[in-house]
Amino acid sequence: MSMNCRTLALGAGLALTLTVVRPSFAAQTTSSQEIQDARQETQIWTAFSLNPYLRANDLKVLVHSGKAVLTGRVEEGISKELAEQIALGVIGIVSVDNQILVQADHEALPSSANRTFGEAVEDATITATIKSKLLWSKHASGLTTNVDTNRGRVTLSGAADSPAARDLAGHLALNTLGVLSVDNRLEVKPGATSGLEDAARAAELGVADSWITAKVKSTLLLSSNVSGTAIKVSTTGGVVTLSGNVKSGAERSLAIELARNVRGVRSVTSTELKP
Image (cartoon, rainbow, N blue to C red; front, top):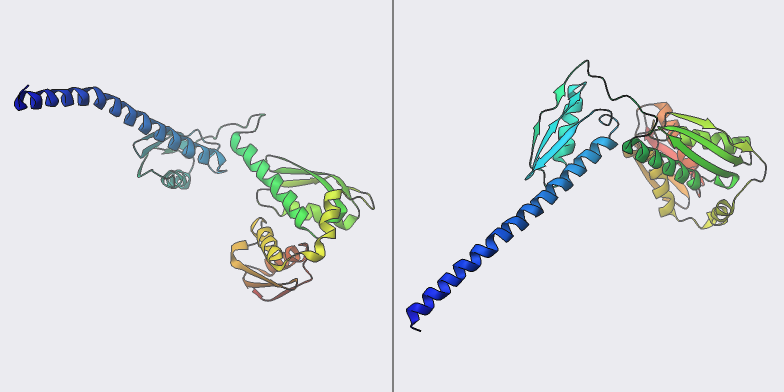
């Protein structure tokens, strides 16, 4: 076979190969893009369902190649803006076509007997937060507490070894972000402790300053009525120092009280914490 004939044959074979492979590659690319679109739609919808300002609205999301189209109705313009910012915050979303209508007389979806996905997640978060705050408390050794949360309404059950420990549990629960009310059903039973709390109490003397600082910060951040991000915390030898600016004397007092109740804290210095 001559060189020209071989060249023509190779050219024809290559063309045939590209003809066969190209549609498969295109289909694979399209499939990958569709998966990415679906993933982003799910992320945006999940964020809407978890947001207390948006979850009651019937919002819809459609994503195509990095562009999100939002539809539905909300009562206020700020909710429309919030939905757009949430969508733009999803990785890969480059633009948002916000077609959500602002309708002053729009009625949110009626509450059903069953909690929504967002409500269930928020309740689980509240329960975990309260349990953590109780475990971090230096008075946890006097508590065997069950925490149940339903749509922001918390029920505490179990036992406390003193009225003070019972009241503290209710106070910590009520000052947790997202909590609407607390039904404190703890029974006062002197000497009521569990193995977990006993172990925590036994380890109290060995609590490191870094652990104390982290738990005080977390307690402040997870508590309502306190600007946790505005308060600086440091610990030396179990002595906690709070500094920064708060909005009122009541907020200052609450921050000091919350810090004092963390396990391992010997005292709290707050001269640099100013309203």
